[in-house]
Image (cartoon, rainbow, N blue to C red; front, side):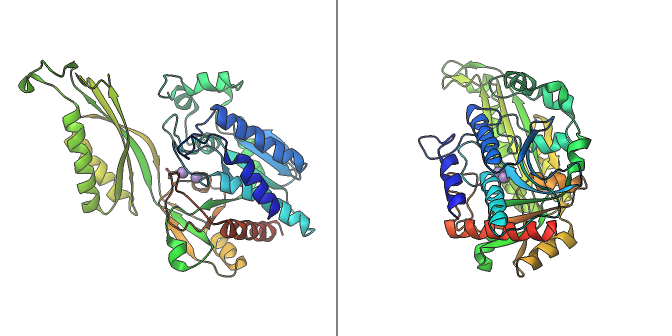
Length: 391
Ligand code: GLV
Ligand code: MN
Ligand code: MN
């Protein structure tokens, strides 16, 4: 797995901060460098690279215009202070799997593609899986153009600065026609494979999940001279809401997280005028997630806006079983993490996922990890799966 190891080293330092975490926001300098790396790796393999209308990259072995292809890949952006594996493992493994097939002399009977989806994490603009949601028409292009980052730049501004055309965004029938089946390899974001004592597994489902923004408004004033009785401090209902989210999540059998907060003006010596907090809620049952959000909305005294919602995804059972069988009966397990494969599956593209064991289960953190031997097993599994699907 010399080639896998070389590619892994090549991307290891891109966007890494001093604490060892990654900052690979969509369309940042790190993201652009990784996109260039993708083009180079594709070029080294004589794969034809195309960027679609929504900024997703595709590298083709064979002509997908002749017949819908078998596509694998993932994303190269990260959450803030994220780990090395979430996303890049799937892209690096995709190129390495093609190398493995070629070394074995396999000539695929269908076009084979490597995809890199844009802005999977939504770290910058708030909405996850922007590239695949635009591609499939789930995200309205006008809404996408108006998404704003923490600096006040819209996605349209950022695309223009990167030399792309915001007017081009939207459902892309031609690109979708090229994708006969999509398989995303991903580091597991839990310990299911550790419990099963298996290096790789196959996904059964993605639990329903969403993000909501709670805007608590108050009145800015002096922290030293304003009597407690005279304050309108939005930090207090915000704090109550965070505690209620935890308590209600336990009652409803779901998970709820407030991982991002913006305080305005954000001075230690001023009562805030506004606190914006992002709730991420997920669970096995959509109704339970909805009940949690309704309860918090009723109690918070805030303006609440749903920024994204992803219904449950049950991956194509026949495809899932075919993959698990081709891999010798590996474990089949669900996940609470969102993926472009889920977006494509919901849009009717036959899709599947291969998971690689994560020894601690930790993800969205610099501690995210997979052993080199398990990564290599993932490449071998992906090559086997691609060979099976191209047959
Ligand atoms: C993406 O990784 C998500 O599940 O938020
Ligand atoms: Mn992620
Ligand atoms: Mn991911």
